[in-house]
Image (spheres, rainbow, N blue to C red):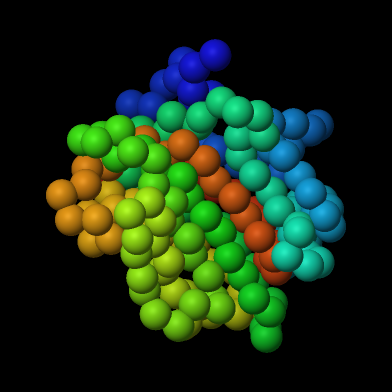
Length: 174
């Protein structure tokens, strides 16, 4: 079994990774804890609410396969409630070394740090209580955390509490 998006066309302007539309939008995700699909009047559509404690997560892919997303920009459409912690993680393949590195983003981090295989990225000024497009230049972050590293693919995404999730997609260019 190869990467999940291995056969998907990734040469267009964007690749949709997650949308709450359809019969079973989380069929490829591993869900744990309090994750629910709810109608949100503000966006006039369904969203996924990731709430509860530290054991609550949405993880893609849900199996041992990798995503294989080739576009370097990731956009997460999210709303984070006031006074709540929020975190998400990206597993990224380094094209040069082949190493799988983790970028961990959280409102709880105060300083950016990195070790050999993972980096912590603080989100101190993340707007609360509003819908936002959290756009991440994964390629630049990878080079900033590990000088000399080159973006290969996004291999995994993990969303932790507390947030409302609307869409996740990659972009060819910002």
